[in-house]
Image 1 (cartoon, rainbow over the protein chains, first blue to last red):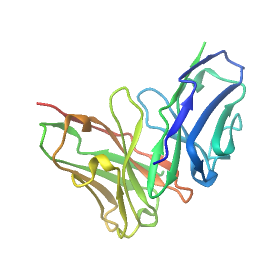
Image 2 (image 1 turned 180 degrees about the vertical axis):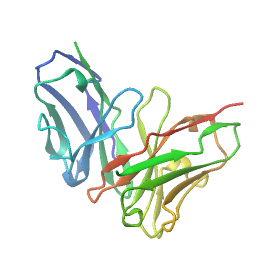
Image 3 (image 1 turned 90 degrees about the horizontal axis):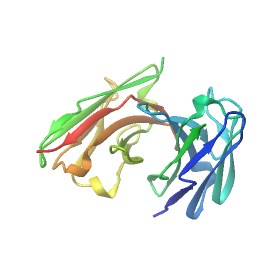
Image 4 (image 1 turned 120 degrees about the horizontal axis):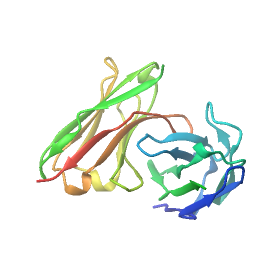
Amino acid sequence: EIVLTQSPGTLSLSPGERATLSCRASQSVSSSYLAWYQQKPGQAPRLLIYGASNRATGIPDRFSGSGSGTDFTLTISRLEPEDCAVYYCQHYGSSLFTFGQGTKLEIK
Amino acid sequence: EVQLVESGGGLVQPGGSLRLSCAASGFTFSSYWMSWVRQAPGKGLEWVANMKQDGSEKYYVDSVKGRFTISRDNAKNPLYLQMNSLRAEDTAVYYCARERGSRSLDVWGQGTTVTVSS
């Protein structure tokens, strides 16, 4: 069973700064099946990135994904106050979905 | 508008049963794999189950195997989750979600809350 470990647990940055969120898999995974989600308090998750680097419909180009093998990154350039949320990575493999534990992004 | 709306949540005693429903609209429901994902209070996301378009394949997380059953009615568009032998640790917000080809979840409902408590 693949385990996804996200770091850091909490990230506190100022508007306009760049956020780098990490997702590490316990073994090499297919980047085709690596996704990122944003969840704001009281809301359902929203798909940001699929296939490790493809932005979902309507997602601003400030959000970008990269990585392969065991190490994946979500980058948010030029942070805005509304980016305050918890971000989850997710992998699909062996007929199962696995989520990371999440990174909480705080905007100062 | 593409939309998923869950219903059926509530308070149930340990050992009890509940059936959740998810009404789909704005897209061809029968063309997509569908999933259920849950989130315990203050915790992260946990995938629960999914089902192929024609119902021929179903998969479950280990913790619900033998207790939960996913089903769908492609003629009427709902997705279901029958939950039996409920435990306190099943307490969560349950979301239904549409799967896209990359096995990501691109449309989510607003969630329905299940509380298992005596």
